Image (cartoon, rainbow, N blue to C red; front, side, top):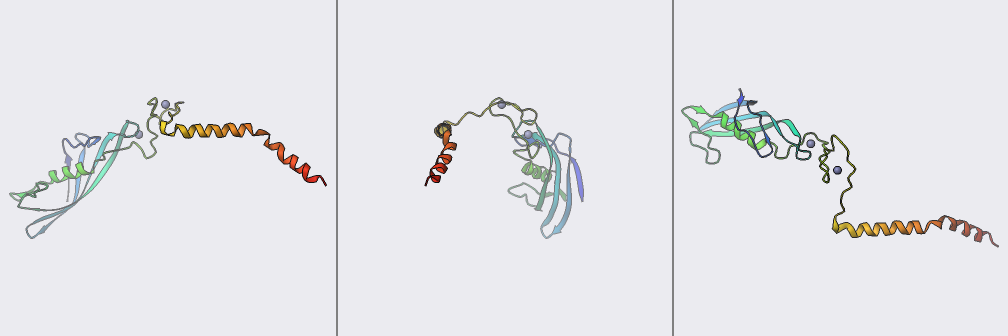
Length: 170
Ligand SMILES: [Zn+2]
Ligand SMILES: [Zn+2]
């Protein structure tokens, strides 16, 4: 069994199935005592806003559905067999809502936006340096002290020679 068609108003906060895009529900209906078991895969394309760089993120979602539907409306989903008819649209709708990504990304390695200047780091490089978290400022200071010590102790190179000379003395 396969049915397909657009489902209006399929969206979550940061992604949606484009208006008019086909949602496909493919699977089987099995008659059991007291109802029908729907086992199906629901697939649909989606568009959203990349959570890292805020540009468009597109992809396709796939949801697995297994539902027993009876003459009594399901208290959670409201699914029901009425007049011998089963509302697969409601089923496909809910499956999509559950599966639509809440934090889509445009691509796996999206570099995101610079937190300082907002440049899209996928498209350009900026020369911002990240401000030092005040809680780490003390450590940065220590690090700089160490650097100074290294510089101050530069004549270190000469020392081994001295030792060598001393070692040669009888
Ligand atoms: Zn992105
Ligand atoms: Zn920047």
